[in-house]
Image 1: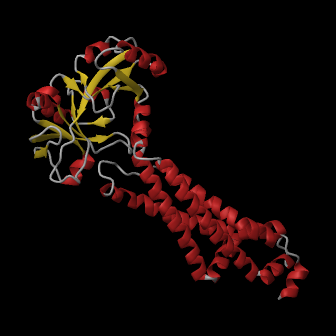
Image 2: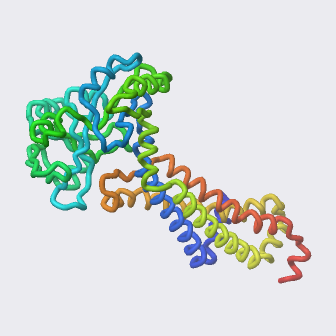
Length: 379
């Protein structure tokens, strides 16, 4: 308790300087938290991808369709446990800026393939009975103020016309970082009302395999089975597919690490300089402490304690502010769920303490090596 009281007393002597240093840590950790949340949003599909799921697309491009007849052939591939499919719709709700992912899905198999998306049984039953039924993620429903039973008009983009849907259910993710922005409707509705060229085709398949360790074997078997056909396939693990899709928007990981590295290096210089000034101002006091019995090691811990206390308080303020503010970025990143997970909170605090430790190391060593006689001469 006496040691802590001494640390707090020293920090309280220059209140403005201490406050500004704490503020520097808070701003740096706030920026780190927001960058980590943005990185997580872009890599969201990679983080939550199922280890036992594969994605099968047209070898030419994902925008090229595949025949719906491929479903039965995929089910006959050794190691395949279940198959579902979906098609991208890409419609416009009220304004082009109101983006959210819209999929025409197979209602019989979609829910089984994605158990992490939780829909009440009664809502799913209503969806199954309504040809124009749809289900929206809770983030999208909240964004537009939708309620069960609402009529939702969406203007087609590459599929022309005005499409109307009845909101029969709202799903939520079982995990905090699950995507709650999607919009699903029945493929039969698209098949019946879409253009003739679209009938009998789907956008992509999702395959569940019995053993994730057999993923490479199943991938090879699927693509070999459709080789030299008019619609050759490209199969990847769901995680690999999500990672390649995320890379199309750029190397977010490199951007986050670069900006974060510059911020923390600058913070290290500022904090180190502040602690060095604090030690120089108290040369006489440190000499007196050593005279009355404070050991070199205790003086070292005292200076390091001050630096770590500033880092801990400022870091905690900044990272908690980022935790509270990160959901607000969802409006700037439509179609993405922005969330700061607990592991990034821990990493942020650890980085703040590391900077505090490094910044206080040289001044602390200098204070520890201080000779009492030489120090008292400077007073």
